[in-house]
Image (tube, rainbow, N blue to C red; front, side, top):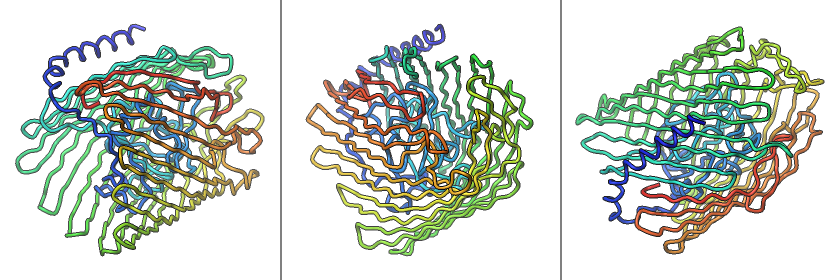
Length: 615
C-alpha cells in the first residue's frame, strides 16, 4: 500500500534526523528503570494524585517499566487477566476487541486518554485494538463505578492511558525498530524535553503485519497502523499553565468479507490558573473521533463519530482536605451512510467531590447531575470510607452508582439484512441502564510488596443486551443483572525479582428474562495472571502466564467456549549504554483459543526489536 510505504518512509526520515542527538546522548548512563512502584500515584480514581492505598478504590497501574518489559503489539495484551479485567477479540492484530471490567461489557468500560474520553458513539465502546502501546507511558485501571466523576458509561470501571510526558532537560530522543512472526514489522521514534518552562513530547510509530487467519482454514488478515503524538505545554512565572495534545492513529484492518480504513483521534487544549494559593482552576476543550470506512461483502459503509467536550474543573485545598467541583458540556455527532433517525445529542453535567482526611479515617464523597438531551436527568453518587488499621493496612468500603445511555446503534440502527448473519435493527424504546455497586476491600502495603483483596456486588437495572431469535437480533432491556466478584492482587519487587499476580472470580448472572440464572455471555468467571521478571546484570528474563476458564457465546448458555492458558516469554539485553535488544514470544506453547465463537487468535508469535534511548 502506498500509504503504508509513505508512513514508513516518513518515520525512517524522522529516525535518521534523530541520529546526531543519539550520538550525543550515548555517553549518558543507562536510563533503564526496571523496578515497579508498588504503591504508585494514580489520578483516575479521585481526579487528584493519590497513592494506590489512599484512593479507597481497586486500582491497577501498568507503569513505564512494565510496558517496556512486555513490549506488547496491542494494549489489550496488557489488560488480559489483570484483576477484574477480561478481553474478547475477533482474532489477532487489529481485529475487533472488547474490554470487560467486573463483568460489565465494553460499552460500560470507559476509556480515557490524558483525560479525554475516546469511544464510538454508535457502538458505545472504544476500539482498543487500534491503540499503539508505543504511544503510551502508563495505564491506570480503576475497577468499580465512577459515574459521579465521569458521567455515563463508567459502570464497570475506567481505563486511562497516559501519553509520554516530557523529560527534564533534553532533547531526549528514542528510536525502536523490529520485526517478527507473520511478517510483522515496526518502526517507532520520539523526542521529548523541557526548556525555560516549555515541555514537549513528539512520537511516531508504524506497525504492519500480514496477519494470521481469524477463521479456521481461513486466509491471513493483515493490519497496519500509523500513529502520531504531539504534546506541548508551557508554565508561566505566575504558575499559569497552557498546553495542547494531539494523538492520531490511522490504518487498515482486514476481516472476513472485507476491510476497514480507520481513524482514532483525540485532541485537546487546556489552561490552568492558580486563582489563589489554595484554588486552582482548569478548563479543557477536547475532541475525540472514531472513524471507519468499511468495504464489506454485505455492503460498504462510512461511520464517523465525534465527541466534543468542554470541562471546567476547580480544585480547592483546605489543609489535609480537598474539594473538587466543576461542570462539563459534551456533544456526540454521527456522520454516516447509514440513515440514523437522530444523529446528535448533547449532555450537560455538574459534579463535585470531597476528599476528607481525618486520620486514621478518610472519607470520599462525590455527586454528579447529568442532563441528557435524549433521556433527561440522572444523578449519580459515590461514598467511600477508609480506615488505617496500622501503618501497612487499610480497610475500605464504598458505594457507587452509574448509568449507561443506549448507543445510537442500539436506538436507531435501521432494519438491515446481513444475509447468512441474520438481521439487526435498533430499538427506540430502550431505557438507560442504571447500577449500584457495594465493595469491601483490604490492602496491605509494605516497602517491597503489597496485596489487595476486594469483594463486590453490582446490580444493574434495565441491562441492555442483544437478543437473537432465529437470526433476528434486536437490543432489549433485561430487568436486572447481578454481578458478584472477588479480586486478589499481589506484587513483590525484591533482589532483582519482580512478581505480580492477579486472581479474579466473577459471577455475572442474568436475573431478568427467560435466561434467568444464566451467566451473561462473553465473560469468563475465573481468571489467573502471573507476571515474573528477573534482572541479571545487562540481561533481563521474564514471562506471563494467563489462564481463564470457559465462557458462553450465547445468552442461553448452550454455546460454550473452552477455557485456555497462555504463556508469554520475554528477554532483554542492554548491550550498550542507552541501547537494548528485546525478544518477546507470545503464546509460546502455540495454543489455539477463541473468546468469540469461530474467531481464533494467532498462534506462537516471536518479535525481535532494538531500542535506543528511554524507550
